[in-house]
Image (cartoon, rainbow, N blue to C red; front, side):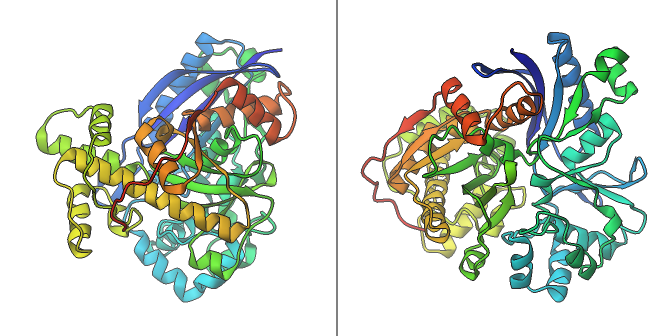
Length: 484
């Protein structure tokens, strides 16, 4: 039996609604709606335009059911850490963007209460200044929590608006820093120490759990009859987009690492339990929840944000649209050594003129800076590949896992230069694709919840490997590029 499910996949720069058809022998995916996700800067900071995003979600779901009236399930995944504060059914304000600078005060306040080592032993998360617990601390200082009775992470918020049911899916909840890394439940002791209201945090559910059916008003807007809406279920999946992407890694063994490559690059391995050693903390590796109780042991690398934000800077300065594939092709022809900079330098986090910041880094580190756009692009991609290689070696050391193959999934899997340079710098085989791994993982967990497929993550990955054959890159001799 083949049936259809709809995946809502919300990324930091764009969103999409995808229709998936799944059976034990079939897996296919097609987009029915794509839309931008543009943050809005106001007098009080940088926010997500969540109402516009939701409008596009509902419109996309309407397109999905018009194409496939027999859709059996809907599920939502998105980026992590950000949330909306609620009072009853009312949202108290547009969610802040994780790149907003307000979190600095939250980091300082949290460090006065809990040591970094103590936090790591509890939540297993790498330090990132925008982690949810620091955002909550900033909101507590500002008094923003005083009127709130619930906090909903982005996919949980969309699910609430679709069904009226407030739940927190565990893979995304694990990125808040408030989930205990060992029990995978809310850490009540830590929440109390941080002075946060316990009532903010909804009931936790596992990926694959039914959330509810569509509210009548939503069903009407999508174009479903009341009867049809009663048979269409909203399902929790790996609602952190990386958790869904890892489900769709087409691996055939356990000697692999993955790079979920998009705005961020998540470089990791899948483990049965967390690694919370002091060496792991000092290396800034994180333990995030995966589907079926797995652990995504990984490190966040700045990612293709470096490239996309540089292109935005050049387009703004030149007033013309830049064709990125052409620019990457030109970068692949650069034969002179280029600067390899620290892709994780905090100066690259905020929006703005990244090429000037790259030049600043090069000047400070006595490295010749790129001059042309193609040299900048080559420098960015070389620097990302260098960062990947460093993280992969650390992953193997800290986890004890043998890594023979690297799977690159997501948008970066289409960047042939990045994939080849990753193979070169790591000395390992790279398998690239599928590009829509997050939506595929979303679809597969829905399909399993509906009984359309059965089995472990390994069996689901075998289905992915048959349907989306990855592109293979073998290491070549290393170029004598300058090290960071």
